[in-house]
Length: 144
Image (cartoon, helix red, strand yellow):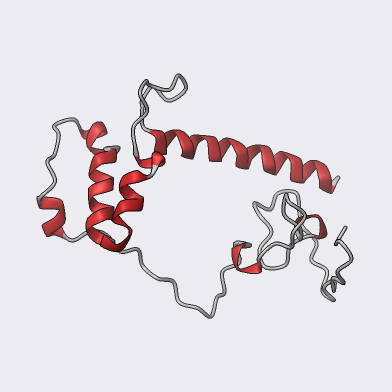
């Protein structure tokens, strides 16, 4: 349902195989609208243009990392939210207040039962992986 708007369908039909991870470029018809019934923004569809060169990720400079106090535990070091907040604030000073206020970058008051840690970012990643797996199951069911 397009709400009275005319919606041109593509002249090229791409068959989506059940084993395919996520449709790239042209979305299947059931994916042209988002959950609110609005047209999906094509810039967010996960399509990667092969003509556009990939941009390498930018990490914090060594001078910023030297100023951060380090802990002795390697696992704690790897998933330290205060360290991540500091690096992001240092690298992107214009967004420093958003980084400091983000609840994703703040530890929870008690550990999560499924992760055994109070790291909210790891918990969010775990939930997104679960949702992606459920979404793949639903996509495969819709294709059959």
